[in-house]
Image (cartoon, rainbow, N blue to C red; front, side, top):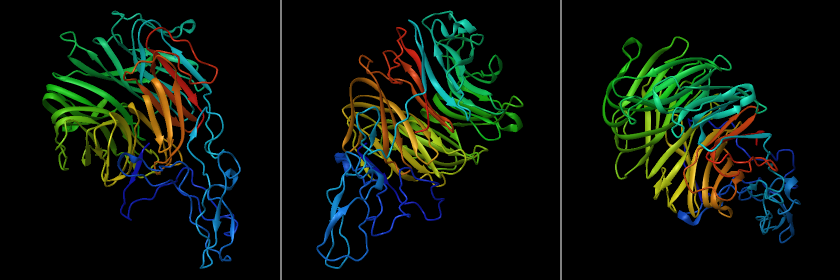
Length: 561
């Protein structure tokens, strides 16, 4: 993580509900505590990197009276850390005006590198280890494309499989074999909070292969899974239609998006009232039918973005909107406590959003973040040249006023103030103010070869968990680097201001340098990490599960970091 760029926000905006890794010194006397600990260092310029959030840049010196030229020991980090290696106190000298100068020579807590000897954070941060991990696969491909965890820790997985997918053969939790064993079929499944398979559902009765389930969320009532995906028509393998399914286990309701054109959903979200929201693309000429004149007609030469709201309780579309233009690639969506909708992805050419300006100039590809209200009226749209949005998250209870986005950038990218120069493909993390759409802070994860941000989830303290994969190196901060010859999974925890506090690296030898699905989801009881991997993956110490021979499903559950 080479740089964190922060941006001023109008004073009328809602303040953050909390900030990770901020320490309260109110119980200590001023003469005992030399200033407050820093909330994360300032970023450097360009590619030189900044001090990021590797434990703070130090607090201000104490202002109490002292005798000029007297020197004493000092430490501006958390008091409990000052004698835990590698931290150490520094010294400060009383100035001629009778006030203490800065603390010099101290070593403050850094980013905790999980599973490394010692404690880079000087025991200020701990890394929870996985409670369990599971791997499902054989000599064909299986992969998780979407994952969610509920308040009880139950895990929802959706994705694709080839041949046979067996979660628990003895319990009858098996799908397949598929009609064409090397072509994808779709699935959705549930694991309990302890990792025990509870049910699995396939979609082999609709259309033809390939089929994929690409989005999944927990809905209402409790225990109801909502899934979106696509299937292929008989006419052409490129002629795709979508489906929306909801239910519990084998009790599943399903509607098709099967108009005259191609209608392919890519993500789903749900609001507190239980309404489902879909995003994806349409191509050709057709209509998304909805009640009360809220349908959306389209005539798309390429792929146009659509957003739809669906009432699963009454099996009817509430409204739909299509945004015409060039070639659109939506990737993810989220809904906040107020019912506002946020969509991210990328596009080439143009994107027309009624009522709000869209910057289409100066790039081959642009990332976009779009905000709609609960009745599909556009609030704002932000685009960023030479970047692609992959995941978006908002705090559902309304505590945070930020929208969090991660993805990949390729080129010099400006997220609102200062450009970030890239070294090939780099991951980025961006936060926008919910109300204005203005950037509040942004950072990027660079290094040798490639780094990809693929998923993001929020933490209770206003920060975020960012997951993805990299090969080569990944710069977590100005002086902290992860390295690997082959593809590895990364998981970072960022504070509310973008400073990294801990970093996981999972992997091993042999994983090819290819795109990988890596998904993170967090709930009150913990977090899950899931996706697809070929070679051994060390998600749990001393429990490295054997590969099945091709791309396998992996999933692991961790306590809250």
